[in-house]
Length: 396
Ligand SMILES: *Cc1c(COP(=O)(O)O)cnc(C)c1O
Image (cartoon, rainbow, N blue to C red; front, top):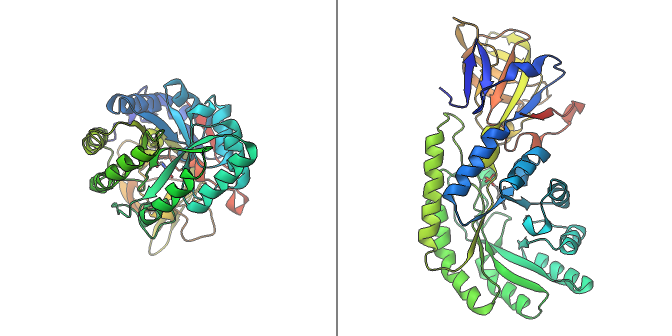
């Protein structure tokens, strides 16, 4: 049984307050993302408790919905952004420039100018040419900025190759062999100040030996930088903590978080630094459901397809990463038989599926289903491909 959902009178109820999801269907016009702010709040508080002393920069790319951002801000969180659009969205939601860390490999001149003019907390620099561009901009504007060098420790973690980011072959971070060049450039000027280092090894980590190895590798490097740069006192350990999509296990996710805290404090013992973290998925994934409607049950000699009014245009993760999402009916029919379906969308691509050969109660045309754990990298990746409408997003 999934602890995040219950059925009362055969209707799906969601989240800690067991909200009746069927109440949103009265004027149904198309797929709806539903976010539970209670669930987000309890996740944030759990993280804050276990990572006490850390600054938590929510990776906004996971879900930039204003109400989620306001909730995180209210709870004491900050924002990790990857574009000017996200900086603006963070500011609109009430974050202060000082609450914002700016990551990403492709920051344009205009984006850096904006960040420097706003005097955000920190820019995480991912290459030497980016560093040179930032110095040029700060010199022109005569404004200082704090930067952290995002280092690429060439360490692999067990995850889907598309979301591993800490390997030599990845575009992310500065290779350790180029660190000396970066620090030499930094020492020749004073407006751009080295305030720390950052890493982000990838996403959906369930196993933390890679993180441990990265921290062990970077500790002496950090200490050396501290001896050369007096403002170098921030250690940004990135995001990437995974959740369990196939079989919900909140207990195991809490243990993973506790383990994460322990590994970091062990590896960095004796290091004087402000710890920063950039979680996305772990905070928000469970808080979101995608509600959609069965358009057709299509039976062929080979397969039985459930064709929904939502597809890779609204939730790309299965197509992009072969990601698993649980799918449940909004209304249970007592004694319903089980069968196996391919859940697919309306898009003209064979990669447009949510699940294959998935066991499920027998469904019929017009039934509603909920796709679970879509609060991270769901709506934020949605597109209007095939000129379908974007999904509605509501918070409860
Ligand atoms: C995507 C990203 C994160 C968040 O990753 P999660 O797996 O959602 O926790 C954090 N930091 C950076 C730099 C990222 O690109």
